[in-house]
Image 1 (tube, rainbow, N blue to C red):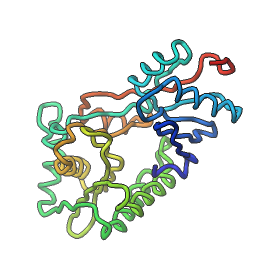
Image 2: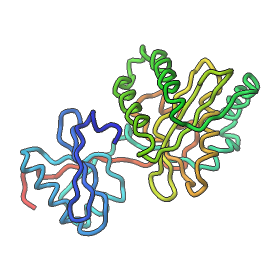
Image 3: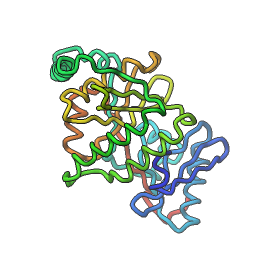
Image 4: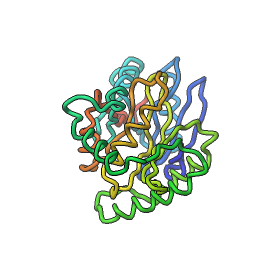
Length: 269
């Protein structure tokens, strides 16, 4: 919801289903309905909504299990295409918190180097008294990336981040930060997705401090409540460097997302 300003996101309740409608690159789009019950009924309602607005039906970020529900409810009515850009990276929580094993040796090396260079570093819980420092670090971070032709819209990302921090107490998030010699050098935050998965929404570090990313990742995951056995570090957005970084942490699963449209946009149900 911190990105709703960018996508003109709207929410509605339909027969105990939670629905989201938004704009994606200027096009009307929906998220998969959240709830339990009559899939044919709720999808018919979304299709009628799109039709009433004279828009083609488009549903984004659809997981594979939802495709099954759609096909069972309305066989042959939809088609889906995968988009690797929006695939989520899912990690074993224990693996991230220990960095054990041969494949994660490079990450352990980075963390060990940071601890050797900055033995008095401090881990902090993310609290309102350090939010200003977090935004200052984000400014430094984005200035280091400004020449990247594949960069995100950092102004939009900062606006989203500011929304989260401004509403921290109401959003139920959790975060952490690293301080070296009085200077904030990394921070991160996230929130639960479900009963066993925790989503890391933001992670920033000053790259002048070698190993800061490895340490903030490890230390934060160590403090995530034990019920969350999986860590979702979200998608790579097709950015090659980000993809390599996420793959290097050895995900246990890639959660593929699909774009869903109707096979016959003007056809009747």
